[in-house]
Length: 335
Image 1 (cartoon, rainbow, N blue to C red):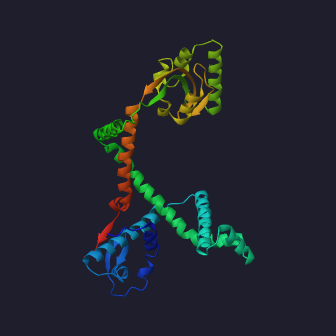
Image 2 (image 1 turned 90 degrees about the vertical axis):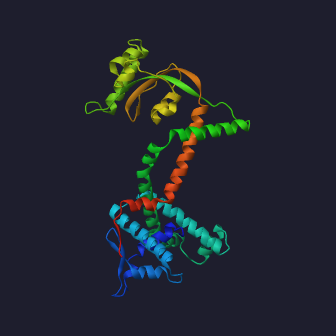
Image 3 (image 1 turned 30 degrees about the vertical axis):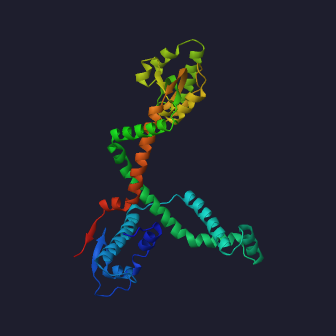
């Protein structure tokens, strides 16, 4: 089957009803998609100037089904393109169009702008005219891309859960052996941090300001030797598992933590206590008590193998996203 582009699908979806406007009374419905009819005359219109046989008719019908599927799904989903994002992309596209027009006239961009000025054409108005011409199609292309992302996002978690760990390990070993044979294999290491922390979670009786103030006081008491870090973690931390162990989280790579927590680990000198900071879990203070180098060669190759396998599966998924959309659609073929 001939591969369809976004633009063809959009043009078909947008012009879907136009094809039926002048349909003959004898025209018949050959399929319906989510209640929207597809007529024989539409199939015939697609086959104009093409060979007419069972295979091409089936291909034409499938193209019309996909176009109707996108049109009806966009209507039902009511996908809204963020205005700021749309305006930014529209501005970029206007500039791209202007540079294209300049090149078509064998002019540099600067020469083109000068030519417009010489003709008395207002540059801002010219840009607005281009924007008005391309905005509708650009918006629909963005809506279609967002629809595609929504469809694919629903499948990504299923793909992750169904990944074969043995397959990942096999590919990782192959990648590592390949580098060894080339003589390019080198141990890969990273710094692990031993960290202890105290966490205060927000609740209706404890807001951001109160949590920060309370942690600042706990930190001051620790620095003044009024209480040890371990005792403070046991008494105050709402991470009860680590709190029972003096707040200790053991040796870990920073990347396993939430971004704000990882950043605080890296930026806090060993032995010192951080200022209170907020993460997705609440407010913390932390102390890095030790560091050590860890050989992560195997982990790195496992991650590379995982990313390669996921990329391949997602690429195939992206090519077949319309098939995924069809799974939940009401598609009826008439005899």
